[in-house]
Length: 493
Image (cartoon, rainbow, N blue to C red; front, side, top):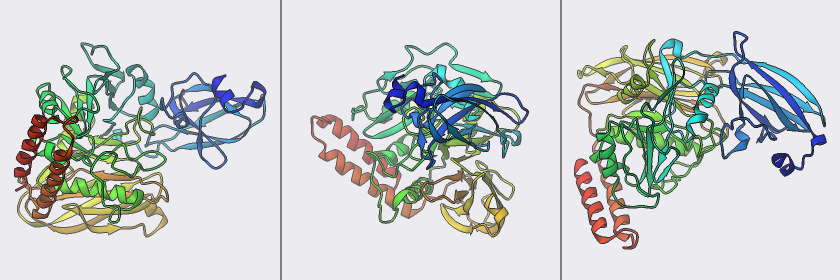
């Protein structure tokens, strides 16, 4: 009764809702249920005994395994039911009288089936206990989820099992041999480690992350740079190239954008104001790394278990064709055969080539085609060359607010890259899709402007390191950091 008492509820001032959730074929299906008040603000259900969509944010709802009894305070409410990005969200009005017992049935329907088109979903930033993963994955309609069982000096497993790969059902897999290094320098995920590696406390400035990255590489890990707002981002990337960079990252939350850089390098909020400014800044940083010569795929993660989003809110769709496996998914993600999203679906081809593929180096007028779809409303779709929009499309008719197919020709030069992004029309949040690039030739073009910005960034970071007190970073450790920064800086000359 603790939850009920906290809301001032007694047994005769609440009621119950017997909820049954069906799929398109009429069978029971696992999904998420969320309680909304009259202003559509999420609230917590009263005691349920069900798996929480998030252990720290009860207002994100609960996981319903096809049927469950939910307890609500008396009053007028809405119960929203969803199953990840590809299903239409259903909202039921519920008027609960004291002591009432209501029954409701919800039938969920897909608005798109991406696996049927060869695109398989994954969330690479997950902080949930392994035994919670099956229900969470099914409720999110997610295919791949590596949960982080080691996080600096914390661990949710005493040891990793001999087989760290778990099949929930065919084509749905989670893994437990994953770790995150999150310290003052920044954050990175190591996925698919053969053996655990030495990690350090959250406040430890030393050893440098290069040591952990190289240890992870030696254990066969996929290295996902969680995002590149971090002070040390250009340093580490130059010395140990990541496999992916978080674009649809954990600052994009279901109800809002966390539009700050935490302990990272602050953005210019005059140039990039507010939530949409934060999104544009993330896009700018991804393009900056590409233009500095890094050909690195975009990745996506929700940080469910830490930040306020359900599992799979931010997700990456990797093209694998008809056959899914976790190894193939990570290989496809590393190769950049993907797009990332927290709302729209986005397909890109350039002269018939998909993201992750290369075009011939010869300059040519190439045909860029994008298809953007959403269950919401599209605001605009952009074709990008070297990170800059070269063609922008806005819906010209009501049907285009849900689906746009656009083609345009653009003369591409050797070393360039082509991507696309789509944004939804929202007043208080940012939902978008962003493709990994199609590249022109096999030698990246390095922009002098991008290289200069990287050098400037490292110079600022070196100044910060020099000012750290000896109690935080000993002189010999400081010297090691500064040597590493100078080595990285030379990469951008």
